[in-house]
Length: 249
Image (tube, rainbow, N blue to C red; front, side):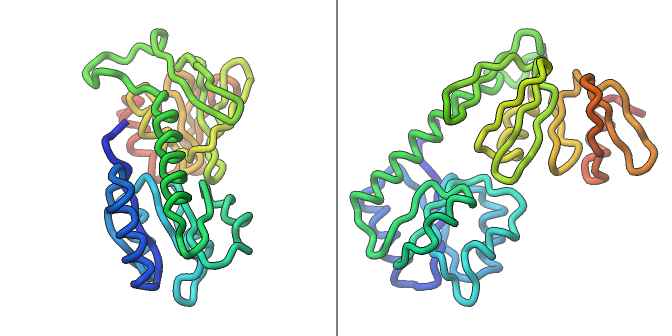
């Protein structure tokens, strides 16, 4: 696990941003603040480009709600802690991968407890191990990964994973034995982990194991047929990289 958690503070009230910054800098040395944002355009840009581990976000940002702003971001790859003076949005917040909901004024004990929980969660997710040496040749028969869901840790052999399917903030692993495992991480997270295992993105919703592609259809925008006969669309944004990975001239 890396030394510090990176975070962004989002609030349209300057004094609230300053207060949270002070609390984090004083009581949470394991957290590094990457920046602050107070308007919609800056928020979308920062969350998309900086990819923090953690976002503290007020519910009401000017004329927009946090939910309206987050709906414009395709993949939420960070943990969200909503911060508000009101609790009526708490349940709705969990739809957006919110790990907790803190009421203003912020209780320091609640803040440190939440940050520790996020640290533990990230550390647990790091059980998903990439190759120890990027120069090591890809050998799918010898590779195993571990993924964590609500019930426990699944140890998977890479060659048994056919493809991964995106469903918002969740990813479904489609396995060769017809089993499916749903993990509460988005597809972009797993793309960064699996690219060195012979996987490639073919569509915003699909990450495929190249080992299990049976056939590629070029007509009608393109599609791939997997070994289990599933047909997956190919997006034009990913076609060039797919052809390169498959050595198609």
